[in-house]
Image 1: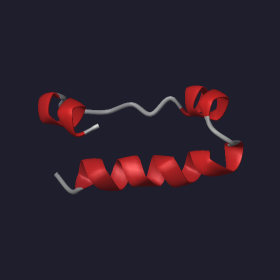
Image 2: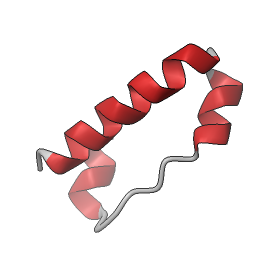
Image 3: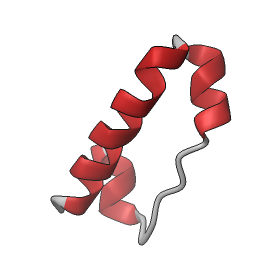
Image 4: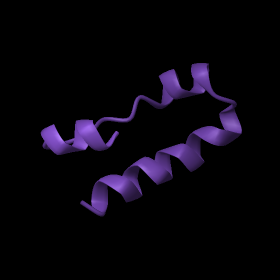
Length: 41
């Protein structure tokens, strides 16, 4: 994620794809972590 954020101007979180790869309960938690990481840069 850090390498992507170094190069990108924005970020799109595909929640549907996350839901396929992770348990549904984990998706909003991970989404929040991604947003917090992106906003802290």
